[in-house]
Image 1 (cartoon, rainbow, N blue to C red):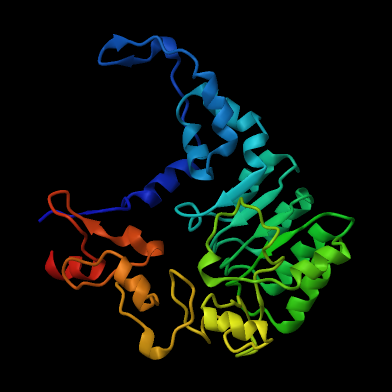
Image 2 (cartoon, rainbow, N blue to C red; image 1 turned 180 degrees about the vertical axis):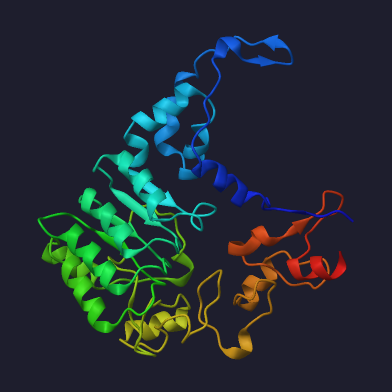
Length: 333
């Protein structure tokens, strides 16, 4: 039985092609297809209107379509004001490529989001923020090549001289201590009014909201995505609980159900806290409560679901309904 994976196996090949120099396109008057000349005209004007809204992967890919689109992407600053690097580009992004991409913003960048970009160093990040001091959203979660000192230096640059860094995401960066956290917070609060500081210092971070889109209204979000866990006393992402009984405890100033994910297991779907006897078995290894487990589709063989975050791991067959998990695919293929 031939089973195809939802996610293509050639993502890394596509990344390699995109990071290489764009090949020279042949003149349209000499370009032939099936031995018949094609009179290629310029792209429709609508293409140029959507360039600023394309993700980085598609933005780089579109430069290979034709000369007109390539020139439009390379010469227009608007598509480069908000740069988000995620899969499949994140694992191949290094300092040199980051400098080349961010230089297209000409110092006017507003958002820099590097999601799990493990090859970015302190020097590479500092190079970018030195040349783009008006960045107001800096998201660098799980960029394990960065150090707390490098993050502090970047935050200081983006916060001093009345610059407006409003949102910072650093969860997953190693060795951040309490004193590092206090230093970062002191810089972030430099340009906030007293009312803004009070709102940001009393956040309600819900576990199942942690992967929401980057470009959304963040007024109710915390200024920083990490805090000191009241359970283990380490600097990690700390979450509140959505369970009704836990909400009532929180209203009575109880911190029983507030903590990091390592101290308090939570359902990947709804964010409720769970005891060890409430954990349901999943194909991806994430935690699910019984209610969410019942609602998700199951593997045809082992009857285990994937959470929605990892549903792209499903193997599907066009001739049958349902899916097969990756473990069963290896075992039965």
